[in-house]
Image 1 (cartoon, helix red, strand yellow):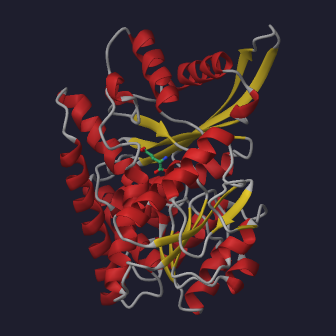
Image 2 (cartoon, rainbow, N blue to C red):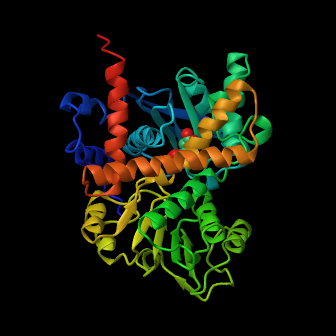
Length: 419
Ligand code: GLU
């Protein structure tokens, strides 16, 4: 993992790469390369022992041309201002690729949640939600889960907002538990879109996913659900999976659900007794497999690793898992990379369905969610492939940015100029 590559610079480079192929003025592009605003705040929270601790937190609102700012909130010790800015920009282009009516935002707290009690995490989350109150709202900016946050944190954010506003407004945040206004199918949505993208990618490349070998780096919500669906719906063999503890491998394929259960019980995938071998994360990322799914954090694959990647196809479940140099090397090596802004867009797409349900106070069946999600991802894939072929673009990532930037720039142009 390459810690010195700044993800915000990576985002700007991706936009510049696409700019060569689109008819958008440099003045407009400059707007599309930086956030509209960033909140940086220091949360002072009382710990269980009565002492105080200060936590740095951010919310970046990148672009609102296509609708309210939308994106998750992550809790991680590596959260920085530039990381949050990059992630908020990726949300803009992600929402545009799958054509849902949102702009992009992202938030984060610099914290390792493992070090804090549930009561402390609740106070930290409510403190952040209080800071966010003037910025968020169902028509303004809608947070959601991201790394190390989930239904519990979203329920706290919703409750804090509703209490302070003296109203009920479940659509202020998505990724909530079902009884608090969450949508069926939301928890599995990111992994489902990764599986759907892999399915479409294999079909496009004339490869059969049944019996294909797959390695998954990262076994949190995105990676473990993607692995489960790739195994159960595509019939592929998930031969290796990893988390921060290392990787487990079995040449005949792992039982992806059993590994998840083992990780839930022990906190790690390593030690799982259905594996034939344990590997390092680097070994997993360079394995000779048909499909590699990076599903952890940014910059997992740098230029050095990219030269050794053995996979034919990469489908990105994480946000920004390749450095720009790695991306270029893989493109030159004819490794087909299907980008994050499509492959993990299922999360925000079902967030959109959740928000629609919240606003109508009318809730969908899981079948409807799964069907509508599939439509958005398949249409997103087709739009990307059409641009790739018609404009003879160098990569599917550039194709995704070409499609997305044109949509955002059109929305901006159509709304006219405000002094
Ligand atoms: N954090 C997820 C992402 O990066 C989901 C965002 C959302 O649902 O708004 O796409």
